[in-house]
Image 1 (cartoon, each protein chain N blue to C red):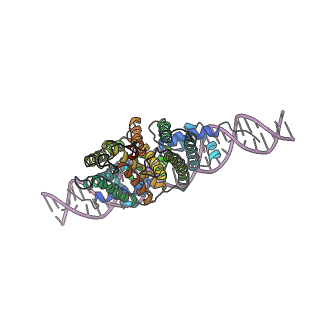
Image 2: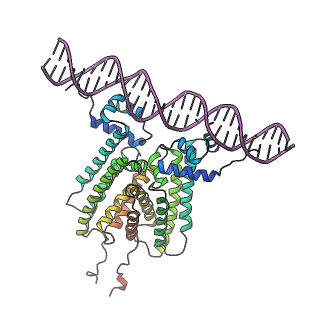
Image 3: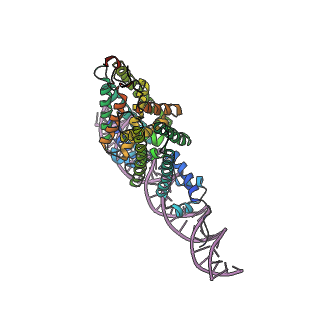
Length: 203
Length: 203
DNA sequence: CACGATATTGACCGCTCGTTCCAGAACGGG
DNA sequence: CCCGTTCTGGAACGAGCGGTCAATATCGTG
């Protein structure tokens, strides 16, 4: 071969991700990327094709990271509901790190769907994976008697995922971590089976 | 005076709203607006100032309409929780009318916040009004014994509002009205006080 | 060490953007 | 009825867009 790359493709993708995350797809100009990535225009186009492909790869990287967080933090031991609550807190904390920009996935859905099929496939897959993980966790919670009988594990999973998307929106309007946390706490208070007065143990 | 306007400003705002709603702010070009509104560029700029002011006025009109829907549909009589559930269904149905474009407010928050202060003020006000209306409704529900004791009316209101924002996001990924309805149903199932076995009436 | 191959850069391209401006059209008042 | 005023439509503008390309630099290889 010949002259090798002088940049790390993944590191470049991370920086592009941050830019698209903060500004959105349309509002991010190639000149912004050139400046932020420290590469010439030609290098960017040679490595990633065009602006849209670069965006898709950056988004895919973000989604992968999110899914990895969920997959590694949810295991088969310990209190299922509490574990789920903790993982959602970590997810919100990770997204809050990017200065009130919300969630890259939510932003992309709102801006580009339903017109962008590639982004649609990406986020659909990611949502499905998260939903399956949440459902498994809530099934375990149900077996352990931690889940309210008012909802099935699948409905609970979809409810939580939907709520998190909503929290990401509201947190852009009210960037107060306590508010987001309180909202999750309220949901979990309802979702958890209250230690109701059992008829069998009643006097 | 002299030559009068040949167009209805509100009707123009409605059409501009639909365009911004479907395509987003940045992706909507003035040429799109000229074509869709049927006005010359000069007329648009004379009447509304510039693209951003036109967007803000269209968004304000949308938010006013949403708040009016909430205000008129929630009154002081009838089953409070069921009324709230019905109103959210109507809200989702109204937004679904615009062909999978989701909610104009949610889209605008995701695309333009936290950078656009004017839009931020607008949606902050709208969210506050909705939150107050929901809180009042849930306070009535609590008085009538319809609300789960696990949450305060205010927490419940914030939970519902946040959830609706999330539903609007998820519905862009999965444009299935049944899915959105099921998510709301699950939330209301948890929110409503289950007719628990009361200790005082137990054998 | 020299050559082929690839990476890098930034000037450059055509196009579209948001905005301005002006010549003509259409009204109300005197 | 005509004049002053406002509205209208579209041509025109500079800026900035996404994307290209040829010259140059830098490597692995024979």
